Amino acid sequence: MPIRVLITGGAGFIGSNFIRYALDVRPEWQIVNFDLLTYAGNLANLEGIPENDKYRFLKGDVSNLDDVKKVFESGFEYVINFAAESHVDRSLYDPGLFIKTNILGTQLLLAQARQAGVQRFLQISTDEVYGSLGKDGLFCEDWPLKPNSPYSASKASADLMCRAYFETFGLPVIITRSSNNYGPYQFPEKLIPFFITKALNDEPLPLYGDGLNVRDWLYVEDNCAGIMAALEKGKPGECYNIGGGNEMTNLEITKFILQDLGKSEELIKFVKDRPGHDRRYALDISKAKSELGWRPVMDFREGLKKTIRWYLANEKWWRDILSGDYRGFYDIHYRERR
Ligand code: NAD
Ligand code: DAU
Image (tube, rainbow, N blue to C red; front, side, top):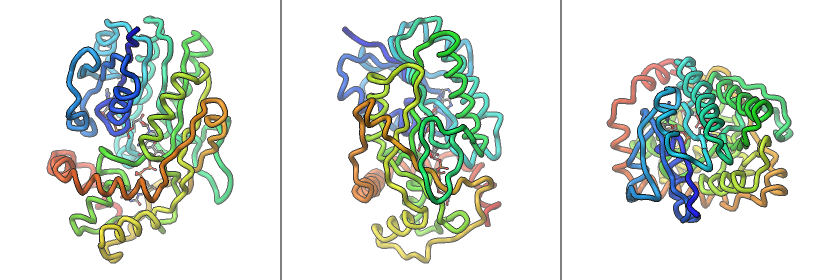
């Protein structure tokens, strides 16, 4: 029996990786990829995937009721909501857009999913909803939500709306909260691809503050497997942390990239810190291990080397993006960081 799956935000980094993964491991799926193609959405991320009864693309906005109603004219068993404004730095300049896409967009999808009687609604959330950790400890799923940026506050709000649709209307919603992803097709505004492409251009790598903030890195394919496990084995109403168990400082990662590319550490430029910069994220993934049977498998150094190789082999992909018209935010943001 075919399973009809609505994937929103499938032209972005994680969504496009997930579509490739799902087409490979779930041949019975019929996927509709619903994406607005913002600066971060790129059909080149899905190159080589033919449109047929297994996969179809539909352009539309999750925060526009007419667009959402239109996509729900076809029935779906599963909805997976990746669509979001995802960059913390951008949320400093336009919080309203994050509210519109990430909160209103999620609510419109929840409402239509409820009307359509879907079997599962998977919300893709983030570890950033928990706020910031000190030196010790790990976030577990019942940690209080203490988001610090407009981005993370919008994601936390969406999580709460998901909870409300489960508690009030019985919609079978499941939430995954993942740590920082890395891998192929990541837009070169996020730390790892930004610094790889900067280094390849022999341009300075702007490291915020003292460079000692810690993130818990997860290879994107490991996240895809975690998302699939949560969708199929997760319990409605529950959240699952999906983390890589690879805590690294930004400085360590930057040095690794430079060394791997044979570039000088003199390219590192310490700049003014990101306002509200969370110090450390780290996830307790024991619930996903015991209830979903999932665990990450990629070794971080191997995954990072693989990712660097991908950016070397796909120079046209990122050079096309860098020559596009997305730069307005950069000029302001990095001027302020000097
Ligand atoms: P991304 O920015 O690469 O992709 C976002 C996609 O959403 C793009 O294709 C964009 O066109 C689409 N989109 C944006 N606004 C839309 C709208 N109004 N209607 C329809 N589509 C719209 O993001 P990503 O890094 O792939 O993140 C995907 C999801 O995972 C997001 O919800 C993000 O919050 C979450 N997440 C990301 C990470 C990470 O490290 N990248 C970690 C944890 C959680
Ligand atoms: O933790 C999950 C989150 O990870 C996701 O929810 C977000 O969508 C995703 O963008 C990511 O957020 P971060 O803020 O952690 O990622 P980013 O790549 O922007 O930054 C990673 C770290 O690197 C962070 O401590 C800030 C630092 N940094 C980033 C940039 C872009 C720099 O020092 N310099 C930079 O130029």
